[in-house]
Length: 299
Image (cartoon, rainbow, N blue to C red; front, side):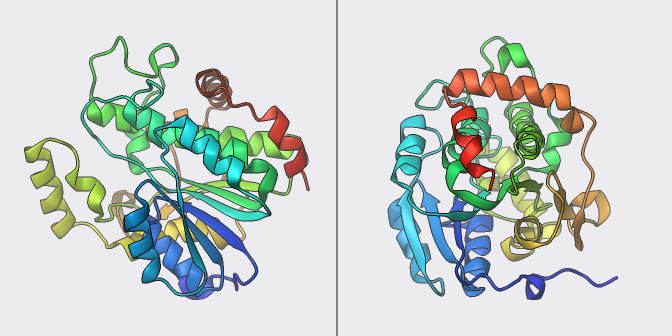
């Protein structure tokens, strides 16, 4: 069996892709590869100055647009300004194991950024999407749990690790339920997910805890792959002919590195009932409902 690589990516000329968090790390590696394959790539970033600096080093047609996933007003503005078809949406941006914080709308920072921001963005952009939505999760979803009556950690003692795990589990449940709804509507759009394994990026140095940052830096040196390798499962989920609902990642030991393949997930991440309940809770929290968006996407 041959190993999948970027050489297997189909020609992307004439296609448009949005990559959230595209100014560094995995997002930048994904954007670079898609642009080199001929796609028009839009870097959706919080810091436009950094985004423009990143875009200057990329081949082909690359644009930079402002998007702050921790602010639903910014998400709505990005979606309102979008015109024309969008072939591929890569929900890549995220934060990892940060100290307790709140988004502009009062959500727990990791859940609000990693899940709710992308939930709202996808829902609002879906009328434009023609091919695929890829959401980046993590092996940390295995340590996550969804507490529907306390999604924003208002009653529980806050744990950066458990909050991150919850947000990454939410990413997979979002993909599961989005695909169910797309299929029910007769849409050809596919929802897929991916995780990079252990890839060294700037996420591992922003925990707010020096001891954790040092431990992660050691892990980055001993275990991690680079952003280019970590981007491979995301690119696979974005461009390979895989079924909707697929989850891609490294196939090596503990899925930390290795050849790109479709990988497994926890029973919780495969629970359709939990996925529907989380979807309903996300609609209530964000005020963004798929009902008005789904019909135009059924192409």
